[in-house]
Image (cartoon, rainbow, N blue to C red; front, side, top):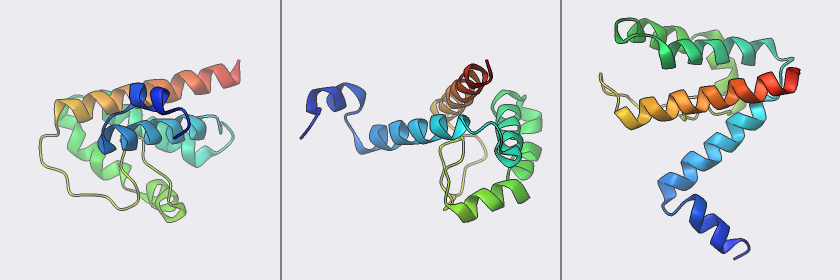
Length: 117
């Protein structure tokens, strides 16, 4: 019941709530600049978000290697908005998913850059 009006402005559906929560968690995780594994994972997500379509399938494979597995074991979320219980993805992801992935990784890099300076 607290902040009902604010919450209604930020999200109105369970999916929007889930996306907002993921964004907050990923933003907080981005402040950990000392963790090399998170840095490596962040770079892989950047590549995945902004690589051309011909490279995306190989990047999907690279994103599921040891660093991601280690973070999965900790139960952390991925930058693309998926948790350790990955769902199967179709060959062509939705435009909205791609846009969310790009927005999330840009926010993470902005937060990291502001943390360093």
